Length: 125
Length: 165
Image: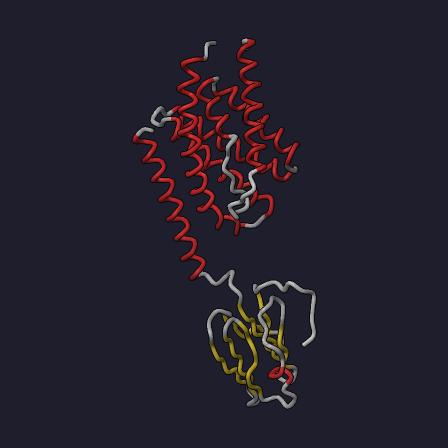
């Protein structure tokens, strides 16, 4: 083994480690590939909320009605709503891709995008 | 091409084939798709230094085709050919610079075999996310390259002493 070999090996390893660190940092700060909740109101996008951050977002409407979107432990739910039927509040927590909670009276849809894929076809709750 | 050179190349192809088979038989997997030790690269590296660059290229390609047709599938063969081609090219460049010993050349081969494979896999599967495997593949390629290189250096030294063309 020559000295140049060692140089090559060290260079390759350093490049690999730097590349890896760079990628993990990129992944951490780039939310493009991360799961998020897409909230639309009457079909118009209202906001995106990453699933990995715990938040409570109160979504108010002009007529005084409201929905409270809560994200906790990687799952989203509507914890409070002004609508009379409370279907969105009673809906199970969502975190799989394409799962959604719909609040018809307010025209609000919260949908998971880029989330985990569901392993089973379906189940009842 | 002299007869004994033909025979030697045949021997090396058989050797590379058997080494690939041994690697195929090894029960453990590193857990990263595409990560291999690259035992067959031992034959290619030794051939590169003993029989010459053209024959080493022939050996490399025949080896990939043989292994692909015998144990693998078309997709695997395609990745392997890309890996083998890039690996051969880099080893040739590394050898031509005359700055590296056999170990260094073998490291280049090991690393770029993995790089070539992952690039083709990314193009075929259209998944840029595969690039996340790259650092690990490069590190594994380096380690196996060092081991293969040290072994190859020992073999080349003995062959040069005992082999006459």
